[in-house]
Length: 343
Image (cartoon, rainbow, N blue to C red; front, side, top):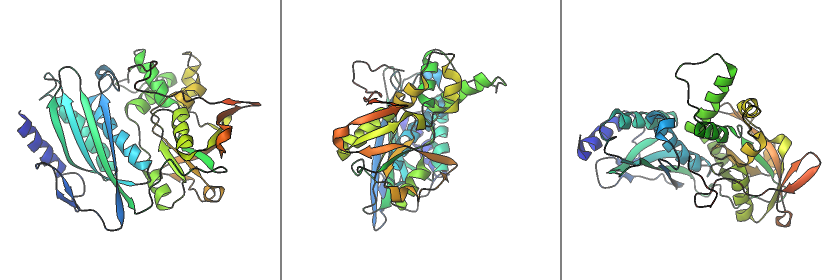
């Protein structure tokens, strides 16, 4: 198979997936052409997954890698309050991978998630790499003009909410680094089920597209970010961009039950994982007390939890645990920090 045969194969597959009503030109030309909807804005996000840095080939499957490569960009678009519509996927692979089932299975994962959220693949690129797999995903979304939710709108008195649960992806990463793998057959032992659950939260995150769209369409959030680097770091991003402080209540953090079950036996701290673990891909958002009462109980089966309050900037970002309150430092992942570690 040469590169042009590969492009034809992917082009043929896209015909069975997605909505082409606004796609003037998709895969097969030098660029995709999209007809924008009047009165709406485009939201664009791009993400890289690099072997040895963001994933280990031995710890995941091609299908899960494809799924995650799209999920991380869908999460970014959701964090802006937009509806994801189109995607482009660029793939760099080694010579030993080219032409194998790995590529087909990777695209199966991409299409699986794209179909779930009505996203159409309209382009991308492919190249050979010397020794690592590289996946670059770009997602374009739409929202009403002026309805984008940024990180800059938080105000003192706003309540801080988070979707879903925290800490499972960080726990999954640490167990994966210790050699844990998804079991091929469902085990009856509860501990193994918990291990599989946290591994899947890391290897196959679920972007909160539904919550992002509701918060954007109903104008319920004053600021929002997705939890990719970790709650502590991403909360700092909101506070820095909004020029505010924040107080987080440790007892209110919705820590994933599987994390609590596993941590006692593996010298892992559930609170630290919830605060600094990263790649939960939940949505962290702020809202006024009036809008807080309008929040749905669930969206797509996912609940939200109030975990704190936005304060004046001179208060800094703080954590309350029982009777103690202390500064909460940004302890999430940084790609170029001295302490950053590969997976």
